[in-house]
Each structure stands twice: as structure tokens, then as C-alpha cells.
Image (cartoon, rainbow, N blue to C red; front, side):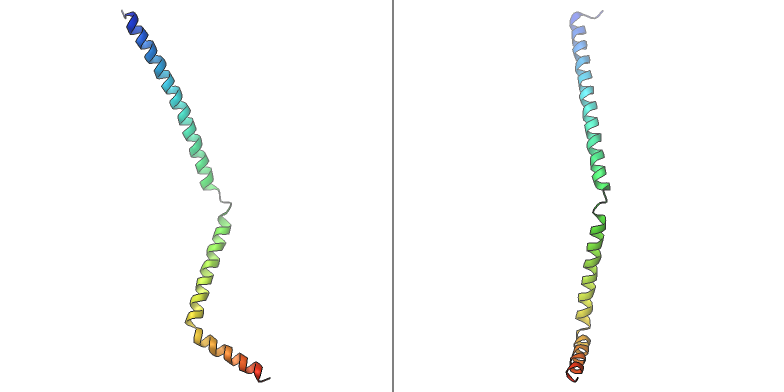
Amino acid sequence: MESRIVKNVNARCGAALRRVEEIWERLGGCVRHRMAQAHMRLMNEKGQGTTEYAILVGVLVVIAIVAITMFRPKIEELWNAIANGINGL
């Protein structure tokens, strides 16, 4: 037979264990809720189109700068020919 002290300890341990399980369950629910919120934020594609357009414009600007730098002498020659043609009118 269990003594009264052993029963008391078992009852207290059982109550403490149930309390820990309740806290763990609440914490688990909170963590699951936070993870679901984070997942929804990551899956939000609201600003994705704007970002893609910004990247596209940036790439086009870089290509234009490289092309102007590479073909600068030809562009100057063409520009001078147009200016001389206009001045000759």
C-alpha cells in the first residue's frame, strides 16, 4: 500500500505534469500559429510584379549604358552627320 506521502507526491507530480502538458499544448499552438502567419507572409505575392519590373528596367539601363559606351565613336559620327545635314539646309 502506498503511504499518504507517496500518494501526495504522486498527486502533485500528476498535477504538475498535467500543467506542463497544458502549457506545452498552448505553446505548440502558438508556435504553429506563428509559423502559419510567417508562411502566409512569405507566400504573399502582392509586390512581386513591381519588383520584377524594377529588375527589368535596371537590366535594360545597364544594357543601354554598355551599348552607348561600346558604340560611342559610331554614335558621335552619326550625330555629327545629322547636325551637318541640318546645318546645310
